[in-house]
Image (cartoon, rainbow, N blue to C red):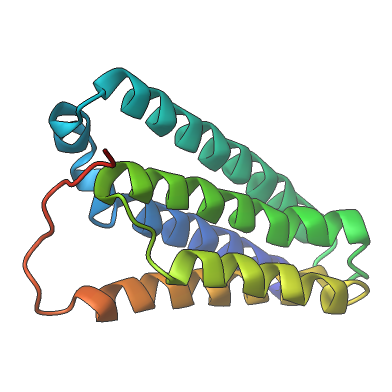
Length: 163
């Protein structure tokens, strides 16, 4: 029973981290970025694509959470690790595109997070799924904390869409 509570807690924390990463700064100014763009239609389509990637990441993350809840202390199969770690990686990729739409740049924590999740995947096969989920939450927390540290004390950035 305790392992299921831990699994549910990790699932909740993953959701909170995805929400936090989405709304942090770029999520607040998407409308401004599209309005300031020289080609709002193209930028809108790019923003739409970024959201499709993020939704696919959320769906994969959800499937991974379901697998962790089903058998938290079993052996994580490759496909399970793919969902548990790949969902957040896909989400971070979409969020990177989204940040590019708003600021014409991508902050280093997102690609680093993707690389860390990918590098961990082979090592995680066979470990308990709850450990794999904890690793994913840790990486997402690292992205969120590094975002906060990077902008601490600085004024909010203005939208600066790509040209």
